[in-house]
Length: 258
Image 1 (cartoon, rainbow, N blue to C red):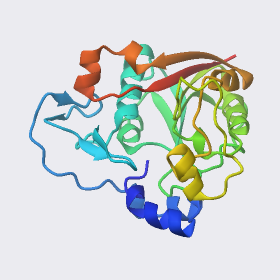
Image 2 (tube, rainbow, N blue to C red):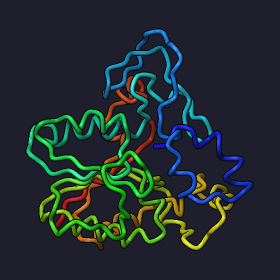
Image 3 (cartoon, rainbow, N blue to C red):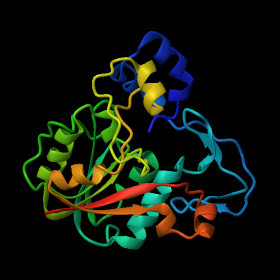
Image 4 (tube, one colour):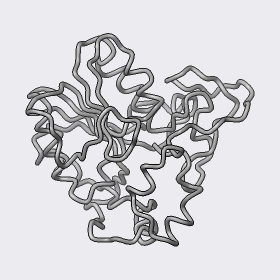
């Protein structure tokens, strides 16, 4: 997760900077210094920070989105709560592959003694391995768990990436997949052939996204060899919990390798 992309956006759109040129900049991965915020009723379930308000985040500056303690945003807090409440990731012995790892999660997962934990990213200089998800070098069944959040929309051939994630998971292993998802869309609008970051920004809300996912995502995941459970934040958490943890309308897909 880049913290400084919004400042580069005018240059990205005007000059057509490609993803590699931007995502290899080390400074964009460093957390920005957060202002001091008074304690309050909003709580981050990842780091325990209690605050009167959270910080704005995103290319459009979503209000109350970013934890001033660990830098988590809504989808990270939803994922953390799901992993805590619905999986035994924090107790079982697992080989975990985490793609494009978010610092707020990586800092905590990496030090769990029950996990053999590896991170990959196509560009980040801070990942354990620099790998392309469409051509992973790991043997079949190398991992028990895959965590991949807001990565697939960056890949023109996402079906190739899904096939690789299924291949490197053992049968019965599981993945948590999160993407920009709109359940009102029956079919995912595609833009794999769009080269202009400005046009992708206009169509998908991000200069380096190739699609917004719709309901056909379940079929894509099933086609790669997964049994899929769709979990919506509004069904998983009460309205009080969503307000307390600052979690918006969000979705994850719990995928078990057949």
